[in-house]
Length: 480
Image 1 (cartoon, helix red, strand yellow):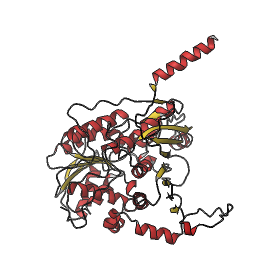
Image 2 (cartoon, one colour):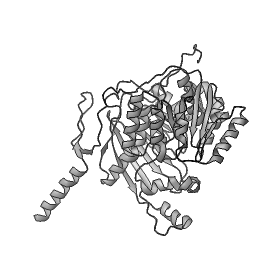
Image 3 (cartoon, rainbow, N blue to C red):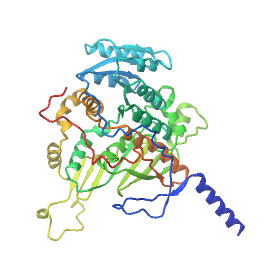
Image 4 (cartoon, rainbow, N blue to C red):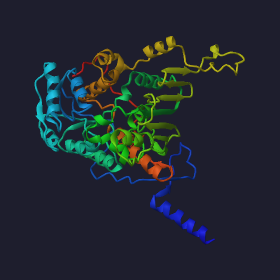
């Protein structure tokens, strides 16, 4: 009996320490969840005088003046892509290493563009770039650990910000960035390129046109064996992230397209998640064999699997694995009442047949009866439902490149929206929600896969917008 009482006290203490509380819904149009317990994190009250930045618009810019911070793995490609954009002036380049800045200057020279101001040689050289009066947009492509402070500093200096993924590593940083964007009323966008993949963007248009019926669920992942690349991250910063952090710390490539097709914070929101992982195996073995570390300690699991429930009862499945020997896979799937889309390992669509096409007595042994449509039909569908953005820029994107062109479409859309005074395709709430999965999955894993609530970064405004909209000028208009 004494043992039972002690166990009861221990359990109660555990619930208290992890802030477990009943999650209840006040919405009448959605069934109330069962009596489960969910870990909640603090949602700070919006400071007085501050307002949300949903569908934020700014005065159109005829020319967008840009400064780049970080010229290691991703930065030079971004600089080169920007040389192909009209109405852009590259004003400044910054990296800790002077030779990287000089290499990026050669990209400008090759494109027949004037040299940019150079900043390098010190840990805070990037602040000098942000301090300039002739920059509208700061483009950040550094390691993850510096993203939050750079975004916040740049916005406080009156600059719009675009930042590589994940934009933040902790919930605190997410809230600090959201509050800065709301207080300054400046654009703060995460550079998530996978939402612009040709298949993802076409599938999004199909879903919005109702081809799949009601979309109920989506899947996404980042499955990429990074063994050939670990040594190219300066100071082993990316490997160290997996040593120190547990959870899906790189969720945005899989999560972004899923959130778009499910209208997250545009009529629905992610309500809670639960995560599971398996023991780290491949990375410790690599560190011992290739790096000579005798007793490597890795916090992150070999694979993290996460299941997310939305407020309207829909689901998202995520997977993170950067160490196992597996083919690259983003696992992109869209599951609707009348259709299905799948990108890996084979692209395909499956659609509910019309009444005329159905057999009077279906053959239950015909496992091909629900197969993908033919390649010919798939190509015809992709042509018919090609997203308007792709029709506008696809051919140039394929020539410029960047993961097959999706990087260029991402940059093009950022500049297009700024030039025409339109809301950006991704806002600071996308940045916070998608990046926060890292910290939220950590909380779930550390508490025996307990459900963890998503904080509402919009603070109540998540259903004000009705559906995702990628803004474009009317076809008859001329871009400014």
